[in-house]
Amino acid sequence: MAINPLFLDSAGARLFALAYMPAGTPRGALLYIPPFAEEMNRCRALAAEQARALANAGYACLLLDLFGTGDSEGELEAASWDIWQQNVCDAADYLAASSGCHITLWGLRLGGLLAASVAAKHPNRFKQVLLWQPTADGNLFMNQYLRLRVANLMDRGLPAETTQSIREALSSGSVVEVAGYPLSAPLVEGISSCKLAAMEGLSGMHIDWYENVAEEGGALSIATQRAVDAMASKGVKIKTHTFAGAPLWQLHKRDAAPALIAQTTQQFAQE
Image (tube, rainbow, N blue to C red; front, side, top):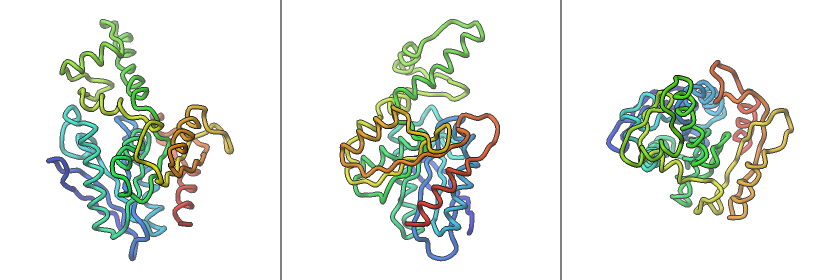
């Protein structure tokens, strides 16, 4: 296995990526799309561990930093959902050319929502989609994220804001900082417009959805089951998996998710 850092061109910027290449001819290829903001940083080690395991099982993996994030060029306030979708397509083209394989999109949290939105926008282009604890509703996700600013202002005794007033400021053209990340309307509105259960264009797509549960063998949450059922009713070939362990995307300290790594590796080793 070889690990190669690289830059690829997309949307007028250079994007940083890490390629994990197996020894010999790859049997498949996965493009990893990371979570949003601090969740991305918290999950870097997890993604790298999974990429190594998959490379050892014969798969090429590319871990991508989207425009304006990580070590890629661009400023976050200049990012948009459309730019990020283009980033995914351009990285997928690069990985397909370098591996000679059809691409599986692999997304964690908001990266899962982005992966599904790209697959829906380009029917029949991708082999399958792997979702790790995906964000199912972009509008709900953004409201929860904007509440971090609301809470921070309250804690500091500054003038109160609401998620609605923040969205109004964004719509007027302002850049709003939330938890240290500058956001603008194109990105917030793009994320807010996406919902897994409402997506069209995924009929016939193979999707594996991995969900964190409190204990081994636990059931999916009601909200997740509703989203899964809605997608299945539209012809999506969706299979759910559960794993017990710490929700790493929420933790401020480093931890591991051995059950998730083992199950995902086994799934692809058997394909």
